[in-house]
Image (cartoon, rainbow, N blue to C red; front, side, top):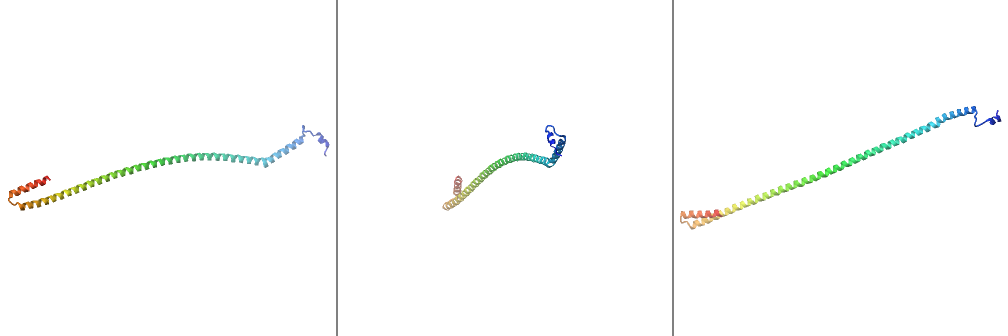
Length: 173
């Protein structure tokens, strides 16, 4: 069955149709078998890896966008905080000025009130002193008149002239 002649007739350049058939059949079988067993899982692994890489790139892009948004939000918040700080400082300065001005006005009013009260007190004391001096002068005039009258009860005309002269002198003082 095995003939050495078969080997002698074998040529690589001119293949046998039976061997082409069997080689093609084995190749097709092996191709489908490897396609099912090896190529499909490799292809799925490559697709999965490609999807993972794409999702990672998308996630990185989304993260970059979020970071940019957060940075913009932080800058806006910082600007808002600086504006708020400036507003608070401005209000504090205005409040300080208002308090100082109000204190000055109150101090001036209080000083005026104290001066007016002092003037009024001085005027009252002056009037009291004048009244007291007038009362003392009146008492002295009465005493003097009484003494003079006792010493000089000579006549009514002389007494009336004396009283008139004394009254004129009191009005001058």
